[in-house]
Structures are given as structure tokens and as C-alpha cells.
Length: 221
Image (cartoon, rainbow, N blue to C red; front, side, top):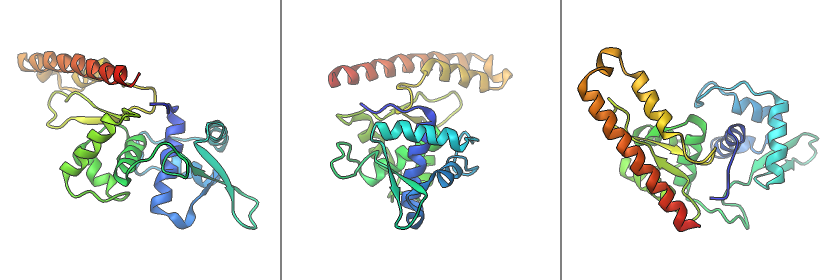
């Protein structure tokens, strides 16, 4: 995968994708509108408080990498921006609406389960059922120009695994995620043998997942 984004850059790209789909009459966005979109208190995790200067600096960096482009409307002096992340003319990265939708949601809200992705990404692209979402995630995880997402080990006490995007910093820190899962468990449960067994299984799954990612990377190289 050739695209690697800083967290602020990912928020900017995802916000542009979101607004292109949900409010096309207001797209492309000015720096002010884009800053407000990045700092929304809904559909965002974490909630940020970016300044227009920070957004402009990131836009300048993204423009140099041809991931965004400037567009000023007819008769307007305000510079506006649109993304060039995927699906544009001559863009080598082509994705289905479903792939764009779930990747956008992962950049906006962080790791999520299939159920969360279906309910949240439905506003960006149609999904028939959970199997449709799962198929989309498998496609993103196995694309020749990817992987773009990874399935995380299931946390102790959770019934579903979450998925994370790989555009910001590459592979997530799986060991740290495992430690966070233990820290989040109540103390009386944390000390039980059953949790220890689940942790051992989780650590084994982390090792297997890391090996799988390395194998994908080796075939791509």
C-alpha cells in the first residue's frame, strides 16, 4: 500500500469523502467548512479541536502528494478543496462505494465491529446485510494494492471482533490493544483463570495476525 496518512490528514480525507456523499451541494469545502467538518462532535472519534491553520498546513501537504486539489467556484474568491484519494480520472486507486464507505468510517471513528460499520456506513453506501459488510472488509484486507484494513483480535468479554484501517501508521499496535482490553476488564474478572485463558488465546491470535500481515506484505513486495 503506497498511501500513508498522518491522523489529521486521515480526518481531512475522510471528512471530504463524507461531505462529498452526504452534502454534495456544499462540496467542495472551504478551509473553514472543512475545519468544522473535522471537528464535528457527531460521527467522530476522537473529537478534535483543529485550527484552520492546522487544517491548511495538512491540506498543503496533501496537495503536494496529489491527494487533494484546490477548486474555487465561479466568481468566488474562497479557495475550496476536494479529495483525490480514489476513483478520480487517472487515479490508480479505484474502490467500490462500499469500500469507500467503510474505510471512511474507520478513518472517522476508529476500530469498529461489522455491526457498527453496517449501521454507520449505510449513510454513505448501501449494505444488504452483515455478510455484505464482511465481504467488503475481506476485499479491503486482500486487495493487491493493500491491505487497507485488518481484523483485530477479539477483546476479552466481546462477542465481535473489530476492524481497523491501516492508512495511519500501518499496522496497529496489537500488543497495546491486548493490554488495553485487560485494563478495561473489571478487577474481579481480570483475576479469574478464565480471563487468563482468554488472554493466552488473544496473544496467540495476535501472533498469528502479525504473521498474516507479514505474509501479505511479502507477497506484495
